[in-house]
Image 1: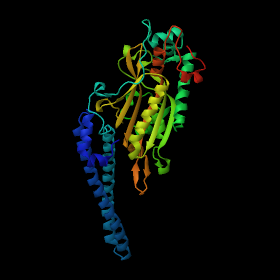
Image 2: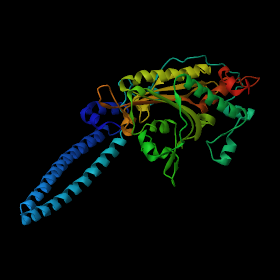
Image 3: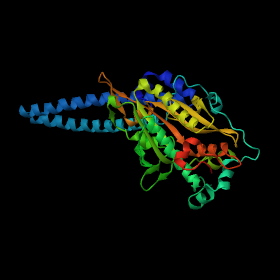
Image 4: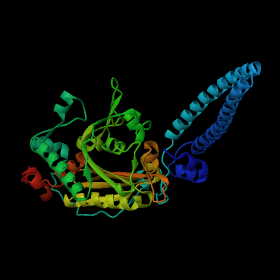
Length: 423
């Protein structure tokens, strides 16, 4: 959530940033926020004056009683009672205004960093040079949705039987490959200084609002109505919410956490060849990395996290490229995002496997996540997160890129975790 002070004092910059996102009605929504804020501050001042007057009048009642002026004291008491009703009414009005103001701010996305390019969609992203060699496959090479049937390692039909479309069942070496990737990613994160967390895979409404999934993505999350809980779309949500309403000590920064969880996304929308097989699922496994830092260090840490993701892809021997997302293609919460894509040789296209983002103070403002600097001033922290990595498309690329006549060759770095070299 944008800080109200920023919207008030840097209005032109906020509107310019929202226009970079192609955010509709940026002028009108920001103007509405400023107008409600003005009304709220006028009412706050009025209430403070009314309450101060009430305190003075209450003291005067006591003085009149001591002086034996009962009638005057009674008259003043009646006036105070009427004034208290006015204060009560204005207090309720202020609560309504504050709620409306917060709801408005919840609907406004983050302002992109100055280095984020303008653009409407993926075509306007800045693509860097690809790293790694794109394999040349045999003419009869198969996409992963055929390979998994050939080697009987993932079963979509069984998933449909017990749950529905988008919930695959991993079998035998397919299940072991999943587990190997999870262990590999967690092991690499541990070497990079990330502390592993094992959070719940459901969160309450406050957590959803804390990291910005609510109200923005409410219809995209699975909801357990009876308990008011949401199945998590990513481990970012519970891990970052560990620090909701926390005053962090400066010597604890930066905080580096990671966690493996299953992730759940309704992914309502079109289905076709581009989302076939593992390319889009309702449930998938992912290792997430999260950092909490001082504002002045966050972009340096964004690059560090980006390099960590790149190192994982290099060790898996997967060709990849990094891209800087334009304003129109970024997530609601992000101030700046790098996406990573791996090349799927059988599908002959790039597949997104990671997003690494800096949210600046956007989440911290919702979370009330702060620290005191050396001067003793309380400041909001910056939050960052990244997929390191999401498994489905990584598995798809490994299966497709490493297929041979003998079978599927497992990347060397995974063999200690799988216990086998071939599928």
